[in-house]
Length: 469
Image 1: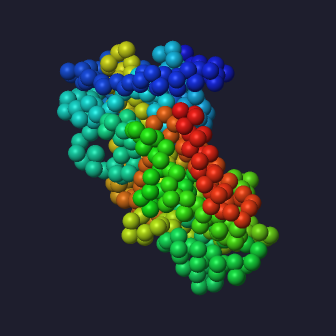
Image 2: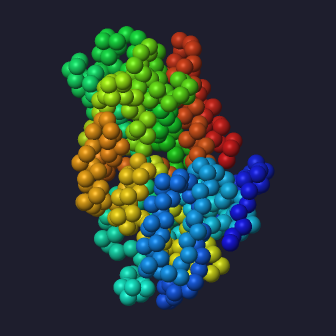
């Protein structure tokens, strides 16, 4: 069994050392050459690092059995490493000694870090391979993806794998989440309020809610970073680039929306997770004191937005879920989040092909995608999952109470054409952190010269990003 390197071996010095290689041009990827016969039936062991808890590992184990019925000589060993950051940090260390797993959960900025090692396999040759593989039950499949399989992926999720500036494919999506607008449906109906489809409509709505409940903070937004990045995408302004000058977000269009949101904060219309000191769902679920009537947060966290049942066994209010407000309701953009899978180089090409077959199985298997989605609260990455009988029944039960996760998934599937991802490069996570801090600073900073405050915050954010890279 491959040796697991303890997280305590991860040091800041090692990460800085890896990152320094980029300045010397020492970045690379593996352009894998598919063996002539594809997978030859060799006995191989594939190691898979992820963050799954026991309920998701149970689902995974069921489908590993199905996979092994097709490929009995491929042994899958999987391990819950911890959080997404733990997976990243452990693999960053393992790559320095060639001890990485075969496949792993990943986010784009993780892969950008791994690319320094030159051991991330680009998937294009595997995806396009027409080599025919005979499985243990006598059936066959091509090694690559069929045109139908490619078309079945939700486009925004699939395209995340090509956000690295060279047009090549580095990942396949496994399960996804996004942001949605949770709102107090009971309150909205009682006060004849409409769900906002644009930010202008949201501003007018916040004003109305403050008139109805002056002590409220109408909207809580969990992620300042997501808010900033999404606004750039919605209005078509620059944020970052995977090539050339990376950090492009200091521009007039972006300063303008930050100034508007500062005004909203000063009027008591909004708050955020960092400013509040907790997830804004706590305000949304509150039944007394300061409360909110809208919350923008992860679609995978729907159950955390649901209030606690009262002594009568009923929820104090019904939760509605909608797409987040837009700059232009006819050109919707919502962020794509959640894990993908990447593939690492092995000395044995048969291990690489076997690992790819397992990646392909998980990401294109409709039944697995359905069950994994229902167990995790994440959204399946395949369009056809909605036609799966079990999943369709799950969605049909959607409501703002006991089946709020189904309602969240329903909204996510309905907005499948709206998903976007950001460029991935060494430093893309720094940009994300910097604009989040920028938003927080600009909202809360005291002083009457908003333009000066905002200009300073933007310049400091750009400096921080450039100094870190």
